[in-house]
Length: 136
Ligand SMILES: [Zn+2]
Picture 1 (cartoon, rainbow, N blue to C red):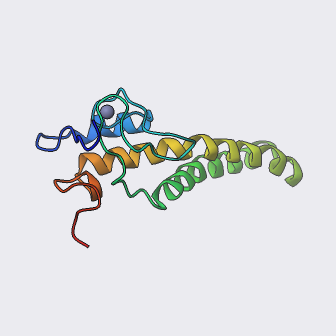
Picture 2 (cartoon, protein in one colour):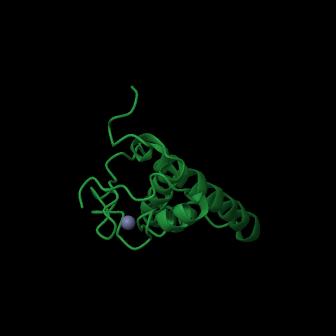
Picture 3 (cartoon, rainbow, N blue to C red):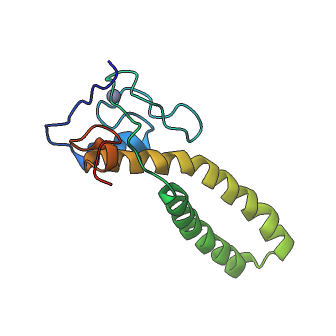
């Protein structure tokens, strides 16, 4: 059903849309996959047909990822420094892979959550107008 946009007229719960987006599922139905690749959003939901092409996540997912990973990793690094005072090379060898893996895992999750919030708030192509048909 190309062009079908469920939930256009009805209320949209930002809590369920966020939860569905964070789980990388369609924010409208929660069943279809939101992603067609690692961070590439699918063109439409495979279950309900919601058009995803109007999303505008842009640079927000990396910002959120850096914010969260940094706020977890830096206190851990400071706590480890206070408790054990490990050599700088050991800190680098342990924390760098942890931070890279955490950022790698979190980036699509944060992007899904942001796309879910955009849908719930009728932002960009998820509003009343068809995708790409809004005001400039
Ligand atoms: Zn769907």
